[in-house]
Amino acid sequence: MVMKMKRSIWGHPRHADRVEANAQQFRHWGIYLGGVWSEKVEGTNAIGTSISELRAVTVHGAQHFRARHISLSCSSAPILDAHVQGPGCLLF
Image (cartoon, rainbow, N blue to C red; front, side, top):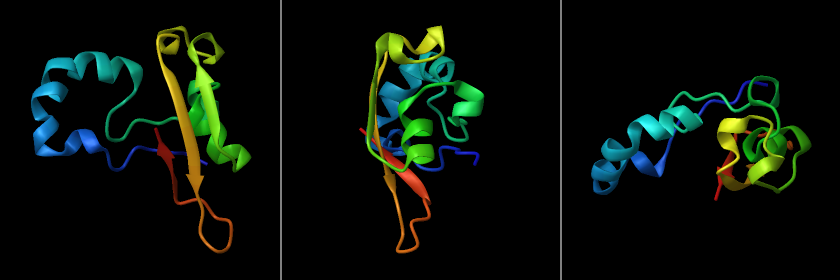
């Protein structure tokens, strides 16, 4: 399953100045609309792991597969419908 970021709070106008100032860093981390976070592409990460395992997951620092993500700590929970199909996840 390929997971792409489709919506983000960073798209909200009140966050525009922060997004603009940090856009290059966010893009480096893969945090942008259209970013792919599957485990196949990014290795161990909260988004890909929570969707593939259908459970809430927290990944801290060096638990991430990619070195560029070791400064991040992320928690994610899958959003499931009545048929246990995951249209996405909540990253917090």
